[in-house]
Length: 522
Image (cartoon, rainbow, N blue to C red):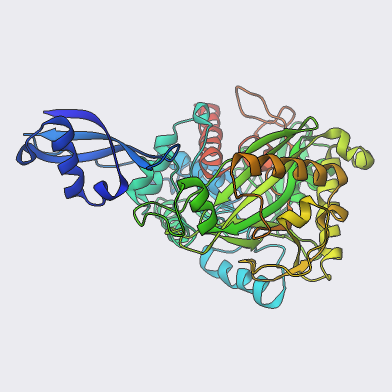
């Protein structure tokens, strides 16, 4: 008999499958020899009060052989299928390609950057030589921004599509099965590139195509239809390649694409986004606050995280992309700018915890850039990033300040060590960030210090600027057909189009665009 049971216990009571069996037997009165196996359905940690406990939902097989679900997908041979062009090999582009293959269509992906293996050299170049390759960096290249930004898979966007399907596709391509039941699933930057390579192998083995170092540089229109596209200055016409349907999945940092669309008078619009800093604490401090423990956390608990939000002077201030046991990365996409992001390895075992802490930005804030029309927010964003570069010794060192010093508007004499490898330079961030951003952050951090006693400390450091939380531009599309509101066959997709952020949400949006295109061919 299969039974669904909910179990709560101390972490050390659940450290192995044998321990879980004993807890099932003890809590539900089932003889241990009758428990033939169990499957995890959900797992979460309850740290609201001491002691911290683990909550499990289990499918328990009593006097019955366990049934293990086999993950399978109907990937077809699409070598001779109708072609669909995809611009961008981030999660939206890759999962759109997998969906097209299941639907019998041939994806042809054009990616401006390099494959994950070659991309590593350019990432190393940023930290070792202060050199940014505009086509290959933390944002551009196979797998998109998520590949080297840690693989967090938590999303609230369940209405966009089938979250579990996306997770199963990742497991099918090598991710650990725990992402299917963890409350905040996470893969880790050390493991995600291998999974991306496996997805590439699936696409190619089914007859799809992926072209790296292939940048979209022009679109030619014939009325409200796409006549041709130019890839790395080589024009591809409809007579040689089926470009009547184009999925545009270029990510939130492809400013040249926004410029191209604006130049071609293809409708785009400015949208709100967020901007601020990345905050780094010692992980042990966050553990002690969240788990209410001493110097060391329980070895059977993961590195603690947090999620914070506050309203200050009518502006939302919130934590973003929290990375327990993580590292702060240089995420700029061009020389002359400073952008920071964060990631964690799968074990989340680095000594620091970092999180974006950002302030909502609206149209009034970038009114000074209104001559740029729908690109006003993008130019405002760029201005802040360039200002950080100018104030950071014109190197990739990030302007930084201790947290308590920032709140008290005092330049830090000495900065603590940081995981940000290009290094930091002491600056008063209130003089670099827009004044309303700095004041909102100061007010919010004070409030967070009251919510999390010990959070407000000079052991923490703030680095500027965290500015690529989402796209400052939206490419408007029809809600039902996913087509651009003006151009037939153009499918703006995911984060770069202003519709979905994060790996899972972007992947679902890619699938939705692929399915929408299928309707065109029916």
